[in-house]
Length: 288
Image (cartoon, rainbow, N blue to C red; front, side, top):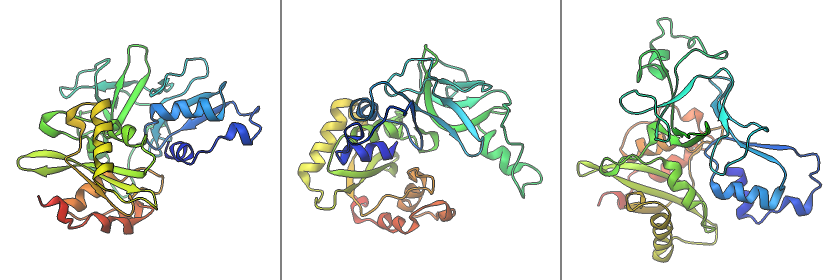
């Protein structure tokens, strides 16, 4: 998803520079594909193509939700649930819901379901990773929604969901707005514990020749407020030199949150750029 966003911001128009008659499908993963990226693909790459946003994981060697050339493509959505996957969205009470945000779960075993972890003889780590939230039900860690048409919307990682004032906000809801701004190269949003609540903090990596000033801050806030809700608007917007991502290209939101709260990040080997974590340590701007 990030690659398509970067192509758009760079002004690349593959349909004008390449012969694409043999290109039939494009799959996007790593993070939720923004509505605007759907538009970019059909406008600047190819009109008659199946663009499929897909979601799964290396742990399941598969997808819980993916594309289907026999179904319509709807911007911002994953077309259908994967074959053999009894996927639901659970609310906080553990009830299956439609057209509501909640936890992505798989309620029955599936063909590529792992049976355990190495060096975990009693299965404690395996159970904690997937079955602790809902007993006997695989909780994948994504925050999403299944529509009445059977398609899916992913709003981000459930363990990175923001909760200002008790309102649950998926991080992808904010990223979608920030990605529209040409002066921002990349971003990460977290919730900071603050005065018995959570406040939304947005870190942005700016274009090389642009510095974050009050004009840019106001523009970011106005873009988010106009297209979402006042709850989505960050309390602080801070420029950083780099945004940490995993080796597979996913934004390392939890690692940033731990650094901001003075906690230790143990799995830095999973990061493509672990040195970037230093950008978030002991920031004066987060003390007030």
